[in-house]
Structures are given as C-alpha cells and as structure tokens.
Image (tube, rainbow, N blue to C red; front, side):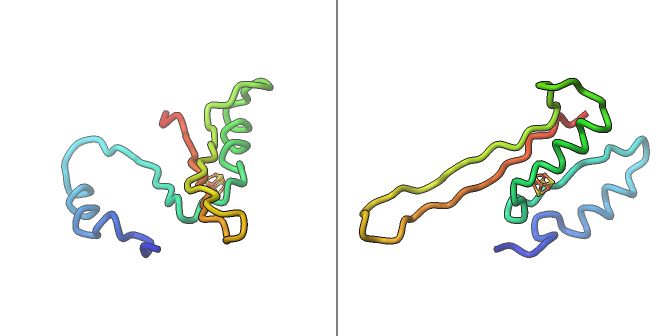
Length: 87
Ligand code: SF4
C-alpha cells in the first residue's frame, strides 16, 4: 500500500503555491482508504440540498478478480470509487 502523499511530492505542491494568479483547489481521495461508507455522498447532498434520487456525488463499487476454484480461497478484491462532480 502506498504511503499517504506518495503521489504528490512536496516540491510539486510548493511550486504550485508559488505560481502567480488564482489558485485552483483539488480534492484527493486515496482509494486504498475509501471504505464505501457514502458519507461524502450524504455530505454533498446536505450541502447542496438535492432532492431524493439526485446525487451529485456517487460511490461506485468495482469488483476485481474471480472465483477460480470452489475449494480455494477466492481471489477477489472490491474497490470503492467516489465520483464527485468536481464543482
Ligand atoms: S470517500 Fe466517501 S465513501 Fe469513501 S470513505 Fe470517504 S466518505 Fe466514505
């Protein structure tokens, strides 16, 4: 499992903050830590007051692997992928 911050080096962040002009914020979700709790979906729904059935943020479930032999331990892994609208 990668360490937190392994993908964005401190120098890259520092250089970005030194650039003149407006700053653009970003949201980083490390999928290794997402447990699919849907709290982000509920927070977005509460913040934007969307009606029932309308979710700007969704969390999808992706299953990787297969059952190869009924006598063996299944080689499966489930990932949760939060999909914010990025607005
Ligand atoms: S990204 Fe959303 S679904 Fe995943 S752990 Fe965080 S709040 Fe829960």
